[in-house]
Image (cartoon, rainbow, N blue to C red; front, top):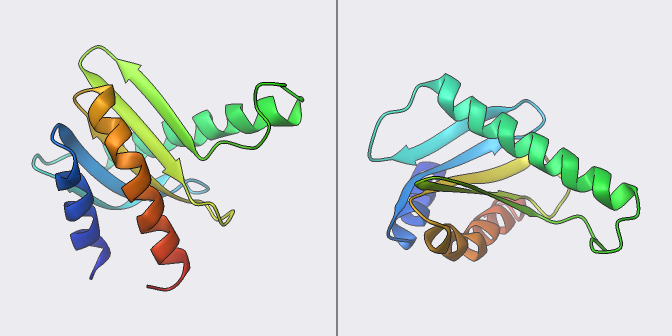
Length: 126
């Protein structure tokens, strides 16, 4: 199954998911996306930049010895009025990430596990 089809499937997993994308956090660029509406590349890349910053802040908290953060988290959830964004990074240390924009936190939460599975399958060459 192609990455585009996998993103389509992921987006349809949770009612309320407006966009699912695959990006490179190091380059802050979205490589593929799935959405019912068209989005300019600048918007997509802005999501990737937001995800990168979120993970940099989490990693800095771990490095500083924050007792509430034992291991670097692999997800970031950002809530704004009318929107929830969840960013999941690959567990293999690569810069790969799945970025989802949903209508609410519950929808975003339902996408975390399938997004991790997608990233793990990609890392395994599936």
